[in-house]
Image (tube, rainbow, N blue to C red; front, side):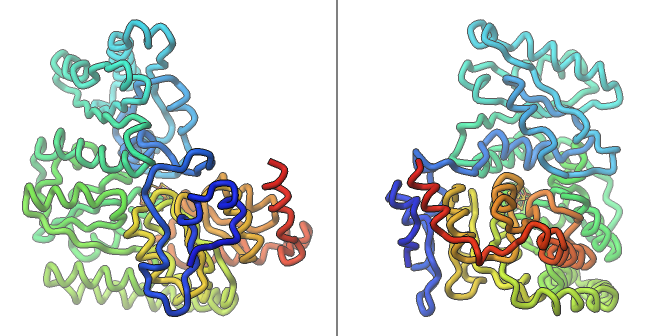
Length: 474
Ligand code: CFM
């Protein structure tokens, strides 16, 4: 059923179809908001752009690479260090950011020369790094600089270096999701198959759609290694550029975030015959099932089961301690894409936390469908939300905590609703058995922190008219 009371839909009637409440006996599809469309003009969307999706979600977690943006400095600077994709390469990929710093004169006369100068300067400044990715931005795309030709010139002059070019300007899609697609396809077209790996196991995987947020990748890779599996590459968290050129030699693609990386898995299946296995590293149940599935594929279920038994025996009592204290608490689960369905059911099942709302900034309809299917009737689903809608939802639903990003999170704090960072985490990793307990601990700390008494946290005392006043004042 549509969420008719939304003030925002009074100003922008089209928004009505983007916010829907799951009814008691409706089939799921009738409770689906519209999704993955261009943002409606007049709403202030929380989405990122296609450049950001390509560079900051997928490209830059690669650890042994100089990542350059060919564009004005703001594209690079304003997106620098907004994520926490750590690496075991002394976090080189997080410490530095590179831009060609295009100015007005470059827009008029072209910026290919300045690009080449920057590529060479960057390599010379970091003599140990021989790999580079270059990202087109709106500015360099509009003037038509031929980045691939410049990259080839440098590779011809310096045979020891290798450069990947990603043409995904900000306008290449309605959101960051357009950029995910573009870089997936660009990587397989340009780089996969250009390095031959050393195979050391009978069980060889690529771990795909995993970005090592606060160490997620390292936790999961540890399980795979304990099963005797060789992880040829990780696309792309803590991933190495040359390992990712060898993806074509894996026996199996183990896919974590399908929203951002199913494209390359599907292409690896078509071009190289490598099967795709979707897994889920969040929550004891889904993770155990995932390890079993991988074990089953290779005929090593016993190894998977041994790890599951050991880890659950070790961590379950702690999870139960938190569950007893979190039971019945209400959360708005407001991430960007696939975390909405990775988390919805398992937060409820394993921590007792009730999901009263899901939203996705850029997820496709399938993501929302899976998310809503995993919520109880009455849950509010919002596609491509804006600040006003989030505020109204918090006043009406009165959640105990919300899981979202920094910007909407700060808005929540202003009305004294505690928030956890669903993107970069608070004290992650959150994947793995241990990680899931860390997540429960962060939720517990968010809800029970004594700071809320000092700040007189009581959303039930705060009236909705504040939001309506907000709307009318505009
Ligand atoms: Fe996949 Fe991600 Fe997500 Fe995503 Fe993202 Fe992210 Fe996210 Mo922030 S790749 S869709 S574009 S799981 S950056 S690591 S947390 S919005 S829900």
